Length: 229
Image (cartoon, rainbow, N blue to C red; front, side, top):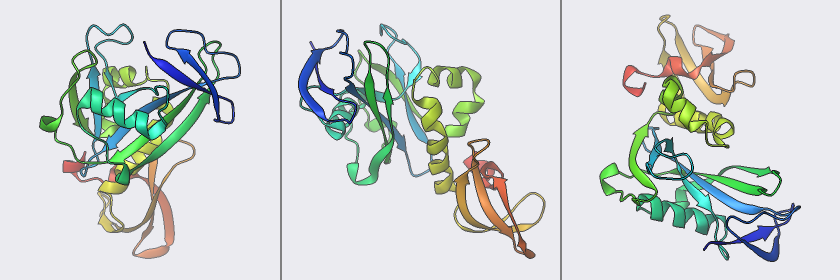
């Protein structure tokens, strides 16, 4: 039996608890955490859920779950990753990427999505059989390019909101500042990377070295080498 702490709308502990499966009282919330990872190559870590899971079985997902009584966000995140994937997230290279507060009758929750920059070989992971059957490192944009995988990841309530920022962080690791020659033969100096506010996709803010007044946004993928795609 899992017991969860309850929070108010300002994320203050109320001193009240609930049992998993019960209705969340109106005006209160329980805490959920999810963990995203990027390795030194800019790949993100996915886990394949166990085939006999009652909810969303046999699909690709990420480590996460509900905080237990007495746990804060970091403690819950550490426990979930250790239980499901068999390694400890490095909080010295991690941060909360996004937080959302969701109101659903009887199911209100606060979710923290953590992002860690950490290299962990798959061979060093130990999967919890009841939860996870496999893992893989993959470039974030490759998820979007695979219709089945993209559909599965979008079963995660937070994924559409977190994905653009995850992709941007991955691109920042793979596209250094400085000079790059693109397929048009022109040399551009990368000034910074940012999310295009219309497409919510990473864009490179750069200038043409032959014409410094020619500053523009170019889709980040154009700056990736074939080995990075």
